[in-house]
Length: 91
Image (cartoon, rainbow, N blue to C red; front, top):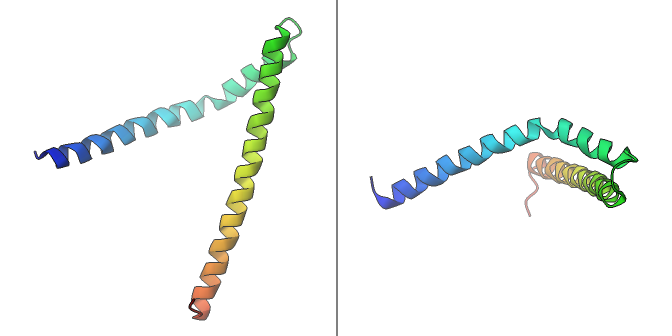
């Protein structure tokens, strides 16, 4: 096997391994969220840990909103491009 072919196959295999690991992590997000929320509300948890848990929740909530906004904007741009293409208008 040539070196370039090997490198390409290696990158493909590595990408697949990372994809599978990411899927496993995504399956654990429910448990992770429960853990963070429990830490945040447990009065026996040190204040610094509760604060970090709260910051984590806010940061992830804001990121989710930003992603939803971007997805909506991209979808609107795609609809506009499809409408333009369907009407035969060229830029």
